[in-house]
Structure formats: C-alpha cells, structure tokens
Length: 228
Picture 1: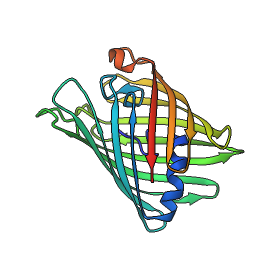
Picture 2: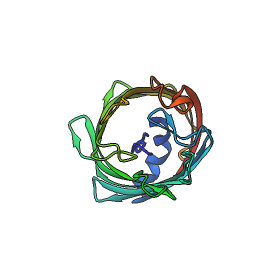
Picture 3: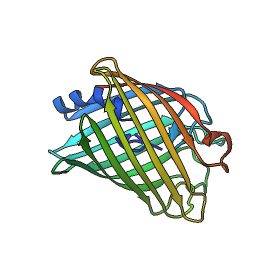
Picture 4: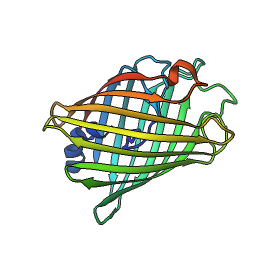
C-alpha cells in the first residue's frame, strides 16, 4: 500500500531529491528500488521480508500527474503483489504546495472474497519553515482494505536538510478504522542523496498497535531507490 509523496507515500521526503530534477526535464519519470521491509503506516506488508518495487509517473500539463507503482507483498495467503494506480493535481496557494489525489490499490492473486482492493482519496499540503518543510495530509477510503468499511488516515510530517547529501525527516500518523482497531504510527529517518538519481533512506518505524502482532512492532528499514 503506497502513500503518494508519493510516498507519497507513504511516501520519504529525502528520496524525492533525486527524482525532482528528472521530473522537471521530462514529463515521464521512473523509479525502482529495494528495501529490507515494506512498511505501510507502520505495518509490514511483506511479513517482515524484503521488498522490490518500481513505478512510472507522467506529468499532465502544469499541475496534473498520473502513475502506476508495484511491489511484492506477503499477507500469509496467495497474494503476492500490489499494483497502485493514481492520479492527482498539485496547485499552490501562496507558500503552500497542495496535492489532491485518488489512489487505487490492487492486489495480485488475492483470494476470492478477500476484498483487498480499495480506493483512497487524499489531500496534502507542505510549506517551507526556514530551511525545512512541514506538511500535513488526510486520506479517506469509503471501503478500506479487507472490506472493513470506511477509514481515515491523518498525518503530520517534516523534513530538513542537514548537509548537501543528508536530510532528516519524520512523520506521525493516525489510522482510524470503521468498527475499531485505530492506532497511531510514527517514523523518523535519515536520507542520503548520493547524486540526482540514487538515494538511501534509513528509517525507524513504530506503532502503538498490539492486535497485529510482530508486523506492527518497531523496526528499522533500509531503502535504496533510483529515480530518473
């Protein structure tokens, strides 16, 4: 499940540095990478195993974008892949950069009746705070993963450069689910931009969720991404 920084998602601000220059030069940009785990809102999507992912984004006019992103997943059943399709616009209001998007999360080989596939709609904004950036976002799904009813996710986040290569970023989020099971998640990490294409993210994720067991416990994740 990917949040769009994009991410989102859901997404890591420091890794966006590498793709920014390429996205401005061409309407089409690509990204791919590997990670020690796929963590979405504090919860492992690969049963604490490694992740391989990739995607393509297309700029539409001055403010629009669309894209597709895919990753392996492991839910302990036959489901083995996730494919997300999204579209959005990025207007500005004074110093605030806005992002309004719709995201469809699809799952490959999901069991019949699992109701894993779902839509989510997002509104996000970021603004400068000195050399740093601060942001907030809200996500809404009318029928969340597993067909459990509607769901909201709220997040506040911040990112700041430390040097030309290093950046620090973090976020605190709240997942609210119809019928209960709400929880809070947070992460903090160090981004390393080796050049305009390749970035490394070293991040700690944690939640206060107990019902999901080890997949929602605190963990360190290393991600290497190439964007061009």
